[in-house]
Amino acid sequence: MSEIHDNAHQDIFYNVFRLQHVFFEAVRSQLNGADVHPRQGPILGLLLHHDGLSQADLVRKMHVSAATVAVSLSRLEKQGYVTRVRNQQNQRANVLALTEKGRKEAVCIEKLMQEIGYAAMEGLSETDKQMAARLFGQMVENIIRQFCIKE
Image 1 (cartoon, rainbow, N blue to C red):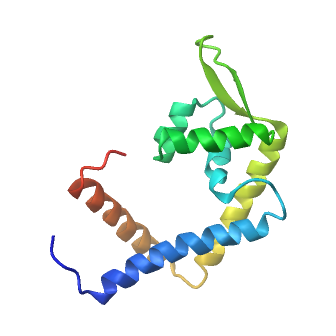
Image 2: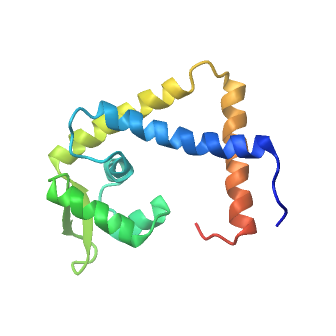
């Protein structure tokens, strides 16, 4: 691997990490005392739109470890946001479902994340947004290809 002395390269990745950090800080600051961690929002969002997923389904869709999902689900269950129910197709298996409390929180978080996303895009043209999506997508594909990452 060649040594990198490119300031643009460093600036891009610095800003990617910074964007992720400030995005989740903005979510956290707006949750108004809810006991949901901003990084649990994606689980709630997936269950909001795809009720009846298994824990393994979440791992695949979120591209995170089984342990990460297990810890988050345990917390969400204890807080009364998620429950496990018997799978109708396979009575030996459980699937996940939002409780009414979880559904309300998921809708709230989804709306909040959308507002923050729109705020982040303020001042960008449609062309800028499309280019950013294309460039970030290409960077993801480059890393997946060059480092044999399984998604």
